[in-house]
Image 1 (tube, helix red, strand yellow):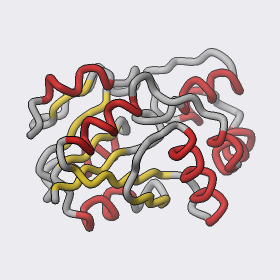
Image 2 (tube, one colour):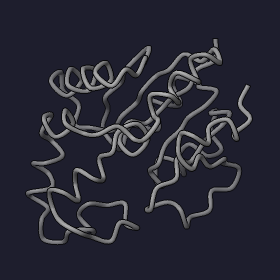
Image 3 (tube, one colour):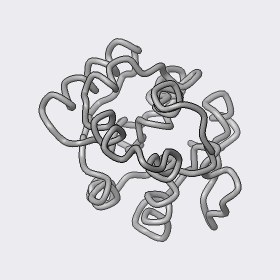
Length: 177
């Protein structure tokens, strides 16, 4: 069975809108929250580490549909997310996926630095992520197809050998089998 690894925040869940709502307008072309809102490091850490932050995220438009299409294509779906790892975070994330009808086969909550290693260990056929650092770490690895989920913080960056997904409605244009 083929395996697809999907990121959650920025790919399935709209973390960005929740952060902007909490901290105010910013330069969304920056990935780092600390660079977007200088001087708010403590508040950002509290926001990011609170499982309830993730419970109320809105799904990315048509993300549920993308998951269903990938499942229909025969992919096992593994969600690998870089959130502060804990049982509570895993439980909230699993509930969120269930509530938004995303048929994920397996969920892994890991830290940001170890995320690429976790993905490599799964030896997936497909990985979809929005983080420039994670994408760079996945390029040239054993991951057969690294796909950049376009967001303001990565839209002007070039990733050689990677496909781009400009929203879930564009999934058929990737030509996956």
